[in-house]
Structure formats: C-alpha cells, structure tokens
Image (cartoon, rainbow, N blue to C red):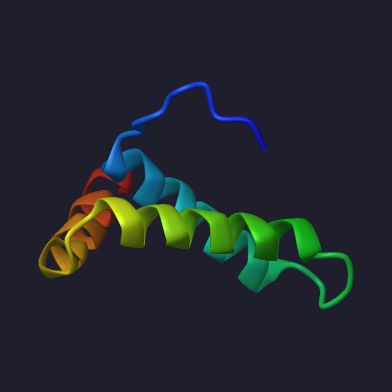
Length: 67
C-alpha cells in the first residue's frame, strides 16, 4: 500500500482504525483478510507515531468527533 502523506494525522489514523475494526467485527468470518491487514497496518502506525501515554486520549477524541 502506498501512502502519499508521510506523516498522516494521528486523529485520522485512529478514526480509520475504528472504522476498520467495526467493519471487521461485522464482516463474515471468510474473506476478511484485507480488513485484518489494514487493521494491523493502522495499529503499527499508531504505536509508532503516538506516545503510549496519549493513546487513550486520542481514542476518546476520535470517538467524540466521529459522533
């Protein structure tokens, strides 16, 4: 997967993670490899770019703005 933006917004990454997680939760058990790979990729990005102490706040902000 090619990313044009070398430093994506962590808040947008968290929103994408939430959407992918929800899609995976609703997907049938077969044929969801792409969703699982996307979730892993987004998880890695969040862990690499966001300090651990700020992850919970980022999740709250992403859920608050998505509502």
